Length: 303
Image 1 (cartoon, rainbow, N blue to C red):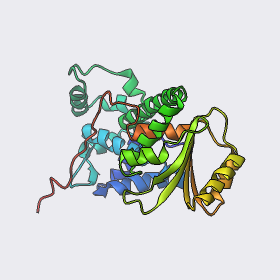
Image 2: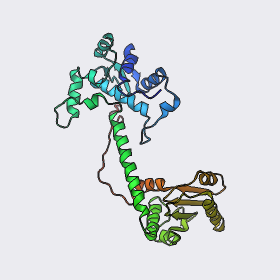
Image 3: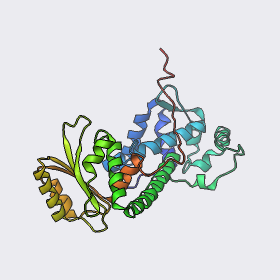
Image 4: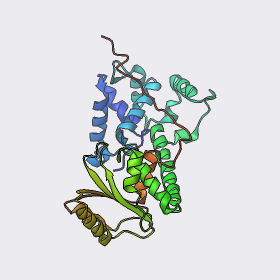
């Protein structure tokens, strides 16, 4: 089954707490996952940032909203239990608990008023119908903006001159920690070829190991024969490691070949190239930055 949205988890979570005991957050997550018969893959599915499980995040928001409405409380750090108000709600046997349902409680309306920048606390139909948590919305919109930037960035790279592309690859490798100084990297990599560059660059700043680089500013897909030629170049350089960078893509045969040979050959296609440029700040600039903060539980821990 699909992972339930966070509003659909509110009633099952409150019912789990109906025994009046103190429960850990993990107990609530595990119980709901089991009762809903989620598969292992569904339980392990991550948010776009890769830093939190999607289901855990949805249970967390369901628990948070129930607390804001006064139906749950936190008796100790990392635990929750039902309140008298929460018991009354269960006694009324609601068909569902969602944002619209919680608006009948003054505590929740006060919480919503604080959440609105203008403090008006006006009803928000989109919030009532939301299927994803605020964190999911933020991360998914960030991922969408990132994908749009990556596509635009790759198109721009393809229009650059071969010389500019050489400098771009040097800059990226340096930002990733390869090549020592920029002068050393430039001397090692900046050998013009047919629309790309070829050369050797230090794997580490001490020059203990080297990596052979080939980069192709191409539109055509790279096939296995071109990878075989590259591997032959590795043998000629007595190099055990290589990186092949292209602005296009690789055939499946090319990927299969590179994964089955003795030398360690990394294939970076246009999509991965754009992602690395964004990650390491090459050819892009920051327009705005937003910090997401959470309670520091250790700060409030009393001896």
